[in-house]
Length: 315
Image (cartoon, rainbow, N blue to C red; front, side):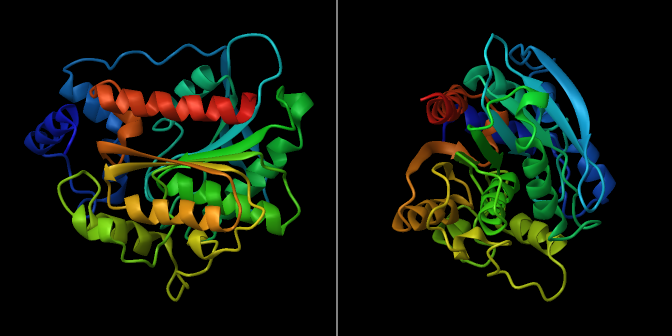
C-alpha cells in the first residue's frame, strides 16, 4: 500500500502537470524537473534547509577524457573522516551537482563522511562508456590523495541513486579489473542494475509512480550507443563477476519499476559471497531520497541509508 504522504505528493504532481521529459526538449527537461524544484512548488515555499556541513568547495579532477567537476562536502567535527564518492541519479541523462546537493549534504553530515559528488558527463552527448569511465577515473584520482583532501584512505566508499547506483556498482567492477582503488563499501539506492531484464516490478509499477517503464527505456536508449550489448557488466553490473566485490548496502522502494533488478543484484552479490544489507521500503516510490521534506516514511528511509553508511564506514 502506498505511503499516504507519497500518494498526496503524486496527486499534487499530477495536478501541476510536470513536463513529460520524453516529449520536451532535453535542455528544458534538465532545467525544470529537479525534485527540489517540485517540492518547493508543492510546499508553496522553500524546502527545509539541509543540514550544516563544515565546508563545500568545487575542484576539477583530471581524467583521460578531460576534467570532471567534483564538489567536496566536508563533515563537521574533528578527525579524519571516511570518503564517499557519490554519483547522482537521472537516468544517465539528467542530474547535476545541484540536483545531488541535498543528498550529498545529508550523507556528509549524517554519516560523518567526506562526500565527493561527481558531475559525470551526461548522455546522449556523452554516451556509454563515458560516464562509468569518468566515475572510475575520478574515484581513483581522489582515493590517491587522502592527505591532500583530508580523508581516511583506508575507508573509501562509492554510492549513488538510480543511474548513479549503476555507476557506483560499475565503478567497483572497474576498480577490481584495473587494480584499484580499494573500495570498502557500496551504497546503492534504488540502483539500475539490469538494463536487459524484464523483471516483474517493471510491469507492476510501470505507470503512476513518477518513474515509468517507458521512461526507463527512454533513458537507456539515450545512454547506449547503437549496437551496445546490454549484458556487458559495465552496462548491467548484474552480469558481472561479483566474487570479491566490496560489501554493499542495497536500498529499494516497493513501488519502483527498478525494485526487482536491484534486489536481484543484491542476491547475486550474496551468491558470490559478498556481505549485503538489503532493505526494501514499503509504500515508497523511486526518488524518495529527495522526498524527506514531504513524507515521514521517506524521511525514515533516508535516515536508514545514512545510518547504514555510518555503520559500514565507522564500525
